[in-house]
Image (cartoon, rainbow, N blue to C red; front, side, top):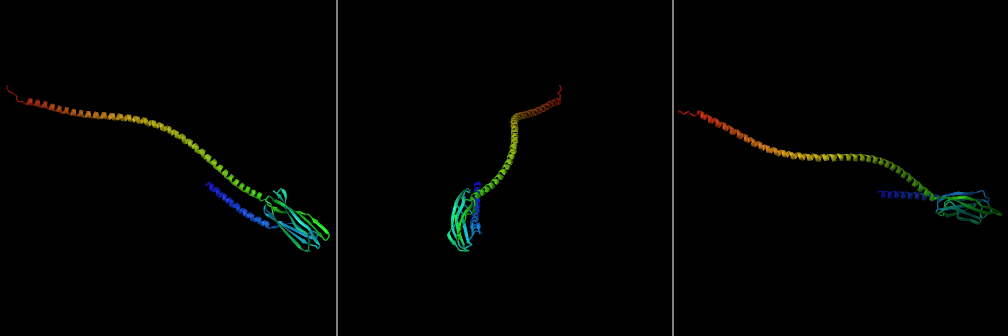
Length: 288
């Protein structure tokens, strides 16, 4: 049961991560398609410039740079416009991402606008800020002009840090939940431990009562066997007395019979004596 719940939990987490990454990817693609002006200069002699680039991107993502050059005077000839873009490996070590040669030895018509677009792929180990060194060199007739400005460009999001931060947030939430569960379990454990102690005390009391009852049972059992022995002796005496009674009852019957015979014999003897006396007294006298 626990394994099934664990797999279900992992499936839910993976599904949520996939959905979150999908939304994040949509936001990143949208951000890569949005350009922001990072450099604009319209007070140069004979030229106005604007440089747009992707607002933000990610390691391994695309970065687009758009350069607009507007000619505001006659006799303008651009000798060179190039730009080198730099990033930072691990947000620490500077590295060149691309060098753009936008224009070289080109004469511009008055009030014309030239546009140059370049798309590069950011290395997987580069994130943080990027910047550009622009080199502009041109002439208006015989007068030469040269500018070398530096300016910040697209921000490369540190998605690895963001992912770690998100993972940390998830782990922290899980830790808080687990910590809450731990304290709940600790409370339950304390309650169960208290119940265990009470039950153990009750068991000890019942065990003591059991041994007392067992001792009483032993005494009662001993008394039972003594009483049973006495009963058997009394029963044996009873049957002996009963036999004696039967014998005595037989002797009493014989004695009663003897008494009756004696009475009959006595009565018969008295009757015989009386009869004899009567006969003697009633016999006529003989004369002599």
